[in-house]
Image 1 (tube, rainbow, N blue to C red):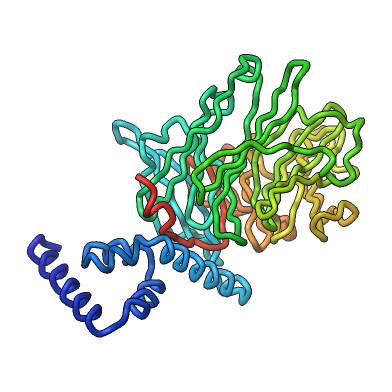
Image 2 (tube, helix red, strand yellow):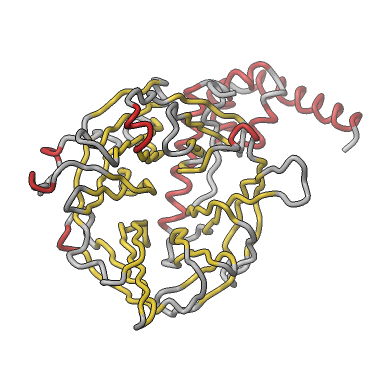
Length: 401
């Protein structure tokens, strides 16, 4: 569109907005704007001061988020939603090098249709995506960084917020720590929270620490991982000395794998009441030749994957917790021969039960029930995520950069 045509269009929009403002009350205008997509709302900010005032108001941002959440939940409940794959990739033949965040629809015929593509700011070059929720992405610096910098990024409005977590002052902790970061949405008070867990691998005082960031208060605070609060936790298991990523948001809680000197379990953190809880793993999830394990969300349930490789062949054991929080409900639903080749990296699962993996041939969709494989047309994916909705939001519009 030419510059003159754009000018005419904006003038028409401004005139329409002025007329609308004269004929309709602010409540009605706000209700109309609340049902518009984010891209349209960012354009309407330029139309008039009254529109900009409404759209950037925290109350409106919250209302818009809740409307989108309700719509998304309705689509999921009626099984009329699409499934979306998110991934980051480097842009070829470009100097300086840059990375893009892509969102694609997973079609029924296993083809992919791209719906959005955002350039990742170069400021995030030394950071990794560690979580996403309701249109908001969380990026964290390397695990043993002394000053752990975290970014919240909303690509749909191209805004971000820089967070500086509590520095580590102990040199032993600096050299021998591992941190895990998770992003979650607190539905009870409409707040986004970040959980940061630190495990110290060596030293006599080795134990895990935790701190929470709240977007509503824009502040960090330390919390205690109370062993007494973990149901069924026996004292002789010892302290938590290692915590492994990822940190998965499911059933209103974040989940990560925790390890003591003699015990493995899933450590959950309820974002509503901010309580920690132990979730026992399946009683016998490991084969002698288990190479690696991974917890994930599988068809909306907590799941545990164990990959084993031996002379007898390679297998993937898939366990599902049929009743959330009840250890006795762990059930092995699949023991799948690993017929793919090359080193395997687990990427996640879809709502319909497909497993996403990456090996030397690229990104693969695998159905554990039919054992069908589909090589997807995604090259050089650095990070892969999955979501049941592609919901965009206005979060950070009134407090980001």
